[in-house]
Structures are given as C-alpha cells and as structure tokens.
Length: 241
Image 1 (spheres, rainbow, N blue to C red):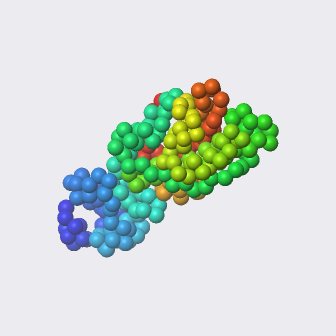
Image 2: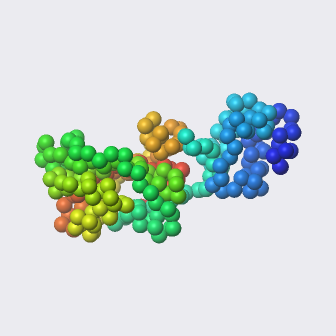
C-alpha cells in the first residue's frame, strides 16, 4: 500500500495502523534497518490519534518487527548487529573487525576509585586498595550496543588512564603497556531489565531487557588485571558461550 493510499483511508484503529505498517515493511517500503516516520508524521499520514499510533508501534515492537530507540527513533528491526561468543580469549573488538562492523568507543570517564570489597576480592587487592576505573560506551555501526565498567588494580596500572585515552580498545591499551595476552578466568551472565540510567545510555526503552556480564580477566601469570561489568542490549547483541 502506498503512502497516499494509507493516508486516504478512513481513520483506522491502532490494529489497522499496525497492519498497514506491517504490510509496508513486508513489501520493503521500509527496508531492514531503516527509520520509520515519527509519531507526528504517522498521525498525519493516518489521520490517527497519538494513542493509536503508539499502540500500533508497541505491538510491532512486541512482535520483533521494529525497535524503538530512545532519542533516535523507530527502526525496522535488523536482527542482531553482533553475535559475540564468550570464550577464554573473547575480544569484542576483534568480533566487530572480523564482521566488518564499524566500531567506536566513547569514554565517559576514567578515574581512580576506592571500589567495594567484592571488586577488591575479584582483583585480589588488600582492603583499602584502589583501582583505575573506566566507563565506556561501545558502538557498532553507529548504534550503542554495550556499556562497560572496568576496574584495573593499582598500583600496577598507575598512569594507565593516559594510555586508555589514546587507544581504540582496552586490548590495544594493554598491549601498549606490555600485556600482549590475557584470558577470562570467570564469567557470569544474567538477563534483566535495565535501570533508568542504563536504558538512557543504551538508548532503549526501560521495558527492553539487557544482558549483564560480569567477568575477571587475568594475565599470563594468572594474576587478575581486569574486573568488568558489561551490559549488552538484547536487541542488538546475541551472546553465545
């Protein structure tokens, strides 16, 4: 159905809007990954209320046909952007490069912090020990796919903040300071709903689930060098173990 045909119909219910949008997507009028018109534009096109448009979009999202990203818009679902196999030497950056996916990282903050005792235990730090803390957003083809919080033990990583700021990834930064290889020694994964802050950072709705992955990485001497907590958008990343 063309846009003019859709616009000339009698005022539809939300089910009618859902059906017409579904047909338009099936007919490739809105291609995979493309952005749908805004709510206001859809209201004009269908001569419908905001409630009807939102209800139709919600139904399409529940069906997995579209995804709604806070602050960006509504897009035809393009399945998973990234398929990430979590192994002993899992490198997210390598996965993106191997799949020809454009990678970008945005550093939100780097600072020295006094972590809680659980983090100290994971990093085998004494009580009162400090860490270098790094918080970043990871992008794949322009979309946020993960939010990382990394802890590096001090004093071993004294000055590591300067290296992190000029590197394209944590792996590259570690190589620059002489750690050419490291491996994952523990991983735990849970699925849950995001906090309001996490939903905002991942640019997704609070009702969309996320994966939370906690891990410890160790150097070749099996000494812990990273404790990390990463949340992945379930809509954009598939995890395999």
